[in-house]
Amino acid sequence: MAHKYIIGNWKMNNNPLEASTLLHRLDEKVAADQNVSVVICPPFIDLYPLARDLNKAKFRLGSQNIHYLDQGAYTGEISPAMLKGLVDFAIIGHSDRRIKANEDDKIIAKKVAAALRNTIRPILCVGENLLDHQHGVAREVVSGQLTADLSMITAAEIAQVLITYEPVWAISANSQVGPATPDDVLPMVRLIRQTVGGLYGEAAAQAVPVLYGGSVNPHNAKAYLKLEGTSGLLVGAASLNYAEFSDIIKTAQKLA
Ligand code: PEP
Image (cartoon, rainbow, N blue to C red; front, side):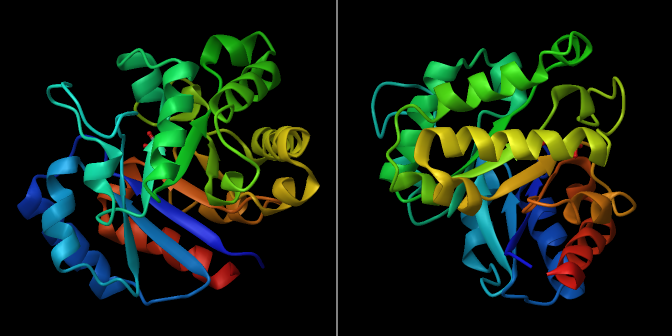
């Protein structure tokens, strides 16, 4: 089976001490596996202390956001140039940022390009909201987001991008409907590959990692991981619990 990615998005949780404790607990529970990349995306303030004693055979770090410029008068922001060497990945276009921080596709496209020019792999999140879902326009929304968000990168750069299908209505914090079913996810994974294929060709469509995110837990993880064309999971709430997150990682390792 192809390489898998299990990504933990801690969102706005865990101070440096709590972050270090959680990572140590996880380290005790999880074995290294070259077929499964485990990426921890903590708040910015935790990145530097975690990087100092990170077990790199088991874990990689990602940020939850980046700015689209490398430096400048942007009070309170963190640039990709500052994160270069500290993180390997950056979540970009998460629905929390699209909705609560008003980030549109133009900004997200600039952030994708900014990550790549600083050798950070973007974990680009796309997904429709509940209204789009109910009105049956999810496909148009997702392919439109993808096309716009990837508009600033070249065919060579797409090899570094990961894409996560994360329907807004399925995220646990929104808890409007609950998780998307595997039957909801499979056609969207295919659509994402098809859209990438239209933009960058068939080889890129086959190679790009496409993940699912939204209310993933130890009970449902296997069903998503077994879906054809699905390359891993973006996990929010369950990544804050080392027992649950390690179970999800072990499920991916068994399948890989
Ligand atoms: C997320 O917000 O990225 C996410 C996947 O959250 P949860 O797993 O809690 O639905």
